[in-house]
Length: 129
Image 1 (spheres, rainbow, N blue to C red):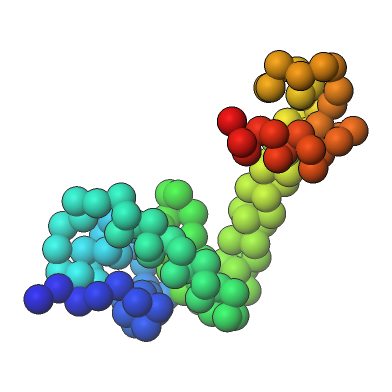
Image 2: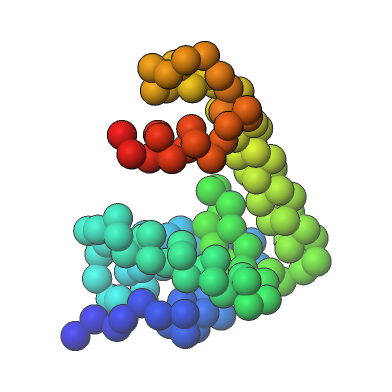
């Protein structure tokens, strides 16, 4: 029977992957935990969600698309991950700010007004559609 993916099993597997040079990609991480090949994106999403929860608890889990997940071995590795996460967050905030400038009539066919002018009403109307 395959092992369940839990915060404990994710952290236990990552203990074997200390340092960037020992990073493990999410598909391999799922396979190492469950003993099965990944056939579902849902399992990968579960691992990503649990990694985020573990980070919120203060575990020094690093990640980068080219290196995979690993526990920080040095301050520099942790700093590199923090910079990567900051860059992603700023990119998302930039997209958010651009979307807030889209006129509601373009989205909903309403009279011309921006999302900034009446965000609650516009978001509610958008959610209803």
